[in-house]
Image (cartoon, rainbow, N blue to C red):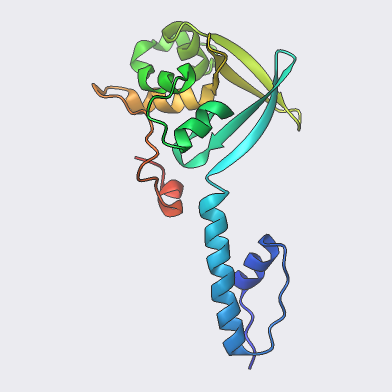
Amino acid sequence: MFRLSFSLILHAVILGQLVVLPCLAETTKKESLAEKKYQQYLENELPKKYLSFQVQGKNHRFLSIKDRFITITSSCGEAFLNNQTQIKCLALQALNKVSLDQISEDDLLGGKNPGSVLCKKSLKATVVFGLDLQGNTTSFCAFTDGTMVSSDTLSFYGEKNKNSNTTNIPSNENRPSEKKVEEGVK
């Protein structure tokens, strides 16, 4: 009898291929190959994604590193991913500095974005808004060196650094597996 699993169909569709298999042995062999290709796809493509935003009338390219919860100017993100030890990027360095301990509850009155408040009050940088190709608006923290990081990223690291004497700047070493990403980086 011939078995075609749902996961093989899913993998084949994602890889842009549709494979019709004549027998169970070949199905299992093809399925494991498709699963391997799909896993490689997940490891290489899903953790990072390039985004384009128009900020103050200019197009800017950002890199979203999902397993580190970072959306940052692409040059900073690429330097981080390439393990460049002396990254001269104020946006990335800011993740070391922010903490929600630096702002009060009153600063957040009216539903203000904590990342935007951290940007202005703690980092003394400028909050700007970006418009993506689908018309969605995202707020960014813009630094004097021209780099930017999303306000949501600042909020995440501000919470992570809260009540901590140490900083939690992300490291590209020992990146979590996809399973750990789903559970959240601790």
